Image (tube, rainbow, N blue to C red; front, top):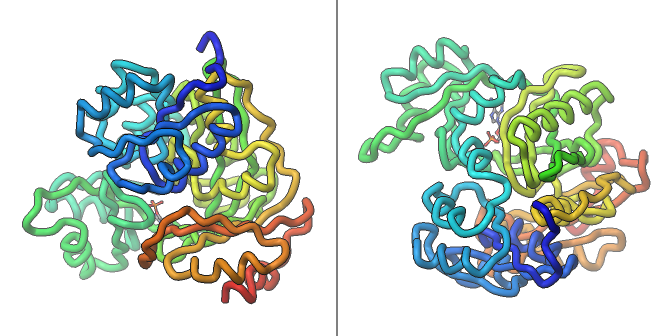
Length: 380
Ligand code: AMP
């Protein structure tokens, strides 16, 4: 981009969830307006945006109208059909690009891309018809994870297969008999030591910035807790960061990307997933860094200089899932806790309702017992 977006310019955000909400807040802090495109009335992002278009992602007229009124488009939700992006892209730049989005939407493209640039993944094989399943699972070995190639998130569209007798039930779970067979992948089950992620930004001029590697704990496939920085040795952190930079470079990324990794040994990481947008595992940056992941995304897509991603504090970030949000009054009453509520009124099991962050001086993260107690007594 020749010139940075001027204050008062409008950033279009595809998707209306909490990531879009925090992105819109960051955009506002830099003097920009946010225009959210979402199918959901009263979506978390639209509650803080200057403007919202409520329409289906395949409503071409609404997409064109939205695109005509914004200066750049980004997304907070990658499972938007590429047709929507074609309509938008004809009128206004989209950052990150269509290629990045298309790759991240499809586990086969994603893993092929990662392997093609030398980033290791768990062993994997595509399953395009039920008849492929047995050979694919034999190739990757048991135990394995079957995953739908497209439109999976938060552990949805996955089934673990530990022995041959579990293949048929797993296929039945992922491929309902009255629907066309969804393409799957079989992936070797990774006995990881830890899960970590890295968020990097890259701008049009090729400048890059990485936030520190963060450690993530999932419960039921959903992120529960992030620990910043990850408790890994320098070589492991460097391996994750170097892989993330290589991915950003290979895409000629303009924007922000999160890469999730399995740590399998010192200096050894396997890439699991690419998310070309701010990520739940980066929420700690809001309080623990001078420039958050959301502000960094805004900077990267607007032609502004990237911000310094340095971590001034260590942090724990706990997601508030479903009924955990009911602890908000107690969290608010606890000194040192920084709660966020996403403005969602309907509580549903597994729904991300908010999160809470706790800061520590650098180098003073608590031990395991302290981590378990960090949000007590407000959260059990
Ligand atoms: P995903 O949707 O691929 O990010 O998977 C969600 C979570 O499921 C991951 O963060 C892991 O905790 C777990 N998981 C996914 N794939 C594997 C695997 N191949 N081996 C072990 N655990 C996995």
